[in-house]
Length: 144
Length: 170
Image (cartoon, rainbow over the protein chains, first blue to last red):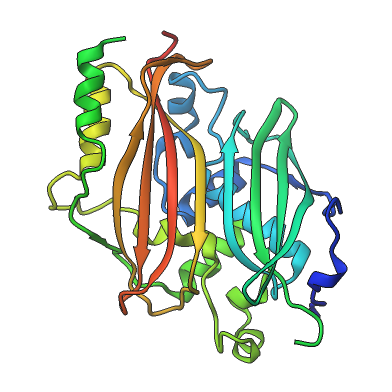
């Protein structure tokens, strides 16, 4: 696959990121938990999750973090360099949920020789907001 | 709220345990498994040829994987004395705050992480809230700050992490 770089000059404050969706299954949740070496039974044992008051197993924080990075660099392409990601977790994301990912550029600026953008993004599931976050990414600048 | 208990918790804030060393070095198979789970097609993580021609000169790990390198092994159990953070959680468990859920995560990335790197990490509890009423039950928010270093002693990133330790339905 050919990757087209997203240049800093071509981004504007207020610009929306393409919306993405992810159909979350039991496998998605467990694969994410195990790939992040998170063996907490909340993320692979539905009996346990129900016993402690959850509807089912739910997506762990590291998967939300990984999906945040993926969502941002799917937009910028591999030349976009993640500098910072922070997010707040709201309602859990359960198997069967379709996660809708949206985002918006809120700030475009330079720092030293870095060309940066800040993006605010959200992952929503049918029962509410699973994740509300902010990411800072360095982008390539034209002619540099 | 039990004020004496809260004071005991606050006394543990800021204590740094001994640095931990990642059980595995950073490696391509774990990177690929991560990308598979996250459905992340960024070629810097898995495409040797693309990565070689990039400014990194080779595959890098997804920066969001930072904490993964430092997760404890399922087996065998670690021999080190419990870290102040574990003491914190244990204290809350004993007081009936069994529930745990992550509420906030913030990561900063300073340097790329390459296959072959061995990550060392230090962490400490930086904040504990008074007992608060939440939709899950009453609980304390506990914030921990991690610093991740590579084998050259360079800081590759940091993470702050807030968990809610709560009493079920109370």
